[in-house]
Image 1 (spheres, rainbow, N blue to C red):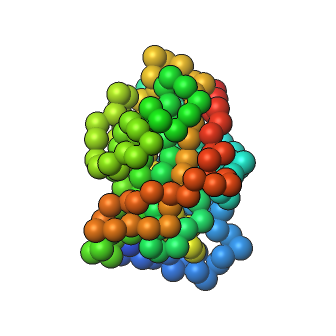
Image 2: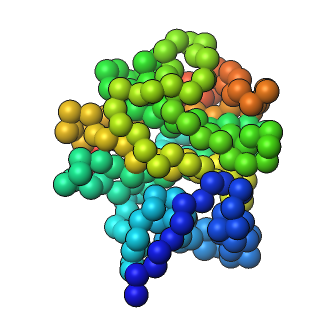
Amino acid sequence: MTLHLKRIEGRSTKAGKKLQDDLEVLPTLRESVVLHKLIPVAMHIHVSEPPHLSCTDLPHLGASLYYNRDASANTVSVAFKAPQTSTGWVAWGLNPNATKMVGSQAIVAFLHSNGSMMAYPTQLDSYAPSMAPAALSFPVNDVSAAYVNKEMIIFATLGLVGGGTKFNQVWQEGSTVLNDVPKAHSIRGDNIKSLATIDFQ
């Protein structure tokens, strides 16, 4: 039987609250719940069984990336998660041109002052980016976020640039959000090492 699921917006809906309750009751099944519940809900997927997903543990900041590529649509649906406090922020993105942070096109997420999770695309166009919402050079849809068991999770569906599958990826976390704007992250340790390539093949 097909499940018709609604998108969640962090903690702002009953669905989002129910999923968080599930994770608090069943913490040892966190990964299973993220894969089988959160991703279909956040991405408007109408499924009778969970979609096939790939997962990679990123080498820094305790982060992981789940993804599901749709070759026919030339898109990839992603779920990025990383440990974070309720006062911090996380971000994940692609750099179409180089393996570095500057020039990356990212999605940032944090807990808004109104109590709901906020997520939006932004351009990392300098070493001190504004972190303001901005259009990306590739399509990005179904952007949302959740905060579960002290982890922030970003969801999005991206159009794959030029039809390729291999990209430079970046990810980041910062400890402070001021007036609903993410502030600068640390420039030491893992925060300056969170760069890699990803092949969505």
